[in-house]
Image (cartoon, rainbow, N blue to C red; front, top):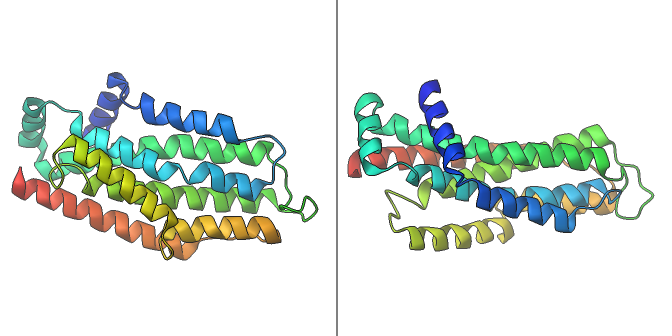
Amino acid sequence: MTALLHYQTALLLRSQRWLPPVLLYLAFLAIGVRAGEPVLGTLGYVTAPLLPVTAWLVRTCLNQEPPAARHVASAAAGRTRVHLAAVLAGTLCGAVPGVAAVLLVTATAGPVGADGRTAVPLPSAALAGLLTAAICVLLGAALGALLTRPLVPARGWSTAAITAAALLTLVTTGSPANHALTALVTGNRTGTVPLPLLPLAAAAVLAVAATALACRLTAVRE
């Protein structure tokens, strides 16, 4: 699996198809992140886009191989393992800028709540930001795995489905991502640092289930 993961990651990096989502994410950060702003609110701002960014990267990894190369890799390692490696590669590539953004915000944002007076401990804020980033990355991976081949082979429909699903996942009450982001916003107002452990567990379960389903369908339908 390590060799397959390295292979899929190298394909993504060399193809430069990671540039559009990552550059859009960096532009989003450049527009909205300011040094000295309250840390929890800023963490919510930088973690939410990781969901569509990761979904985009996972979808890219699952579609980057030419069919002939995919068949060769599948014959050597199995369709399920190749598909899983592509999902993991996209997920890891989505996590890297997320972790960097959380650490940057923790280092530059103000350790206060929205009122500018309530102290917010930066180590706890960093942990909350990393957990929220993990939730968004995991849910993005789940969407990217489900809403592309073999379930949604048409790239146009896949893009539209991922965009709509990512938006709904972020704004729908009860979604792990919405719960974690809302907790950051609430904590920003009250000065209390939330640790979204239950949403993280739910996101992990959803990501594992979605990836397992996608890998199973790949083995059956392709």
